[in-house]
Length: 565
Image (cartoon, rainbow, N blue to C red):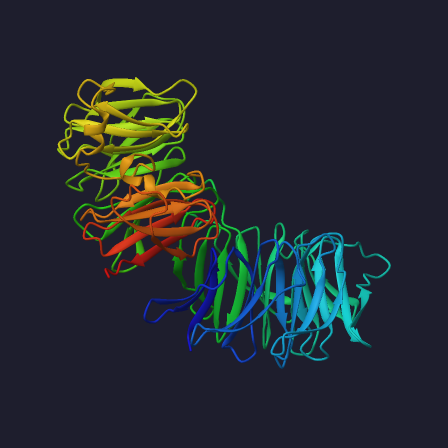
């Protein structure tokens, strides 16, 4: 049906490539780390991390849960695999014994369990011919047979007299029931039963992370950024992705590969998915996001359905809301911590981890000017509503104001309390005042012209009309604190441009919506899940029709439709 299945954060994604549409399975409560597809090609199994992790089985047609498996594994589900007729599902846990379970998933019954290995197990697959289960991991390959009552009997892989035990990272099976395993050494091994039949030496330069079979051979992918097609025992084609990386700090490494009907799906560790036509050798980029490091920068264009993101992979990326695709990418000299559009949308200010700020013109992302005043990361920056100034806050506790009309000369600087860093800022609608948050939960007001703290008249300033509201402290957001709790886990907030709704991003992968202002403790709200961990930033589009959120560690970018009740 031309559907792709993959996971982003705590969400299972079904992608219909012809219409460029995604459908979501969002019943997981934490990061999805394993996935398997049933032989019927419609039933999906996904496993998550967590103290008591669950396996969810769901339909890619209805996006509804069919059943869940729980109560056996601990810490996480490392790998999943269906047998040929789809009646059994095997799973591996992240506990100290990397325990294995075989399930009759429809009845939620465990058929057998066993301790897998004290070392990590990376993959688990059923042999399509005889239902023998194969696991591979650190200095580990075992062949398991279901015997007796709830028993799994294991045989170790036999390398022969000259063979050396290897760390195996992935496996796959030919239609004849021969097992293929990819090794950390770059070799690929072919097994007949539990005995080594053939060794493809130096199949890749470095670890082999992905294997997939097709009628005439198999596909392999490795750390070297290459995908190889094999016919019999010989390589016949090579697809080199090593030069496709947008961020040069993160080399392209192949994490998964899947052959079907002359097309190869390739997933990289740089958060990209490609489709390769083996006949024409053409590559099509399907999914792309930030790679490697955390993502903290986000801002929406003030006049168009466009938003910008910035990551510690040193890239700024521009996305179009309508196409749900990146339109531009620019690599900078250092990691990006924050981004902000000018009021007319013609400029994009970027704050770097190094303490430098760079002003880019928005059409081609060419540099206009740069300033390097601080040595610690720029945590936030914003243009004044009248476009005359640019304010930045730094983790060293400094507030700096630059003249945006005179080559971004430094107008003035001020400091928060000693030992604290400044993390958020907003301008008043009249461009006269600035409000900030620091790391000690102190909310402060500043005279933007003199760049000094406003001690007097705080109550009046608290009721000032603010152009944006991204500060997590202050009178208008006191209701974000639980009735009996402390304001922990709050990372970012964003008020709608209409001024009546507040989005809140927290440490636990949740996005909440409140009425604004929300000054009363325990204010009612709605909650939405999807990110697997810390949500670092949120922002509404100029017309409030969409909310954009980014995750720090999961590097996921979510586009939510904002439906007004």
